[in-house]
Length: 131
Image 1 (tube, helix red, strand yellow):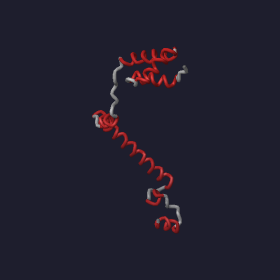
Image 2 (image 1 turned 120 degrees about the horizontal axis):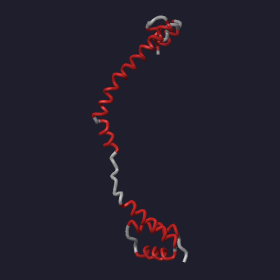
Image 3 (image 1 turned 180 degrees about the horizontal axis):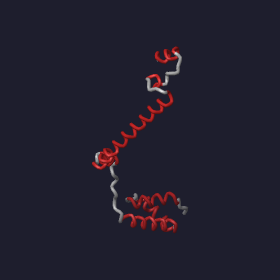
Image 4 (image 1 turned 135 degrees about the vertical axis):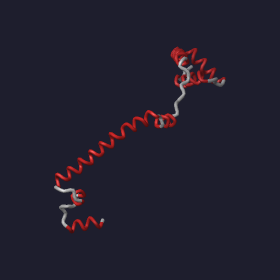
């Protein structure tokens, strides 16, 4: 009798999860008697089941609740409130650096120098103003 190893392996795995119908149970019993590979597979699966049994069920955390809890935590708000003055100071320094760069390259802080239209001919300025 030829044994379909993949089919019997699927039956073996299903038999560990729950009862099989009588025809499938009979086919599996015959296959287990004839195949040493299938018996070894069953032994390995049962050993793995015993090892995993001690772990118990680990509940999957709800990601959305965990994120909301982390965002609302006082520690995070404290960290953000401590960072705010540093971020504001960095932004002010960048702004001052940009203004100084314009002043040293153009020689003035006029609106035309800041917007970059001080060297444009009047016709081009008129074209830009229409857009």
